[in-house]
Image (tube, rainbow, N blue to C red; front, side, top):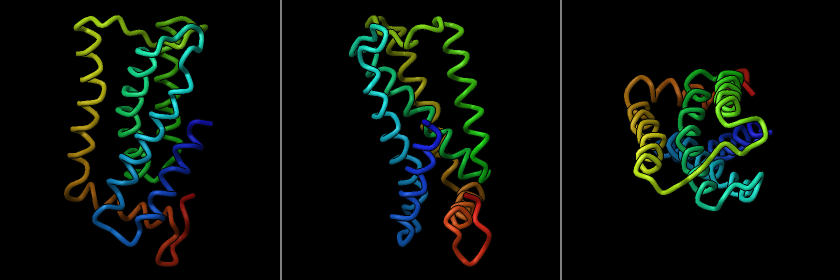
Length: 155
């Protein structure tokens, strides 16, 4: 379900900003990541998840979502971010127990450091990916995803 949401968000942003090639890829990556992260606000209260833990989850999910969007746009393969997402959720469930939301926030310095790292590292990586040949590969794959230039669609 989440992968379908991400896929649709990316395609909507690609199509919506297709006339603005300079902004199309960044808007698809960051716009879809922000909306995907915000969709996790619905986890508030799930198995006792606190509001602060939910906010930490929203922020953390946004960081992961930067990577997932770029992985999809760079490879043109949706199954790669799907596997990555599954593995992250699986590892999280192994660590936190199968019956919990998996996020906590105690206001300790380690919580802040973890939150900055889980967003900062993917954000820096995503910025790096937006330049040079990496950017061109994502633009070419975006054209394929949208079936532009009469090429076969990768949807």
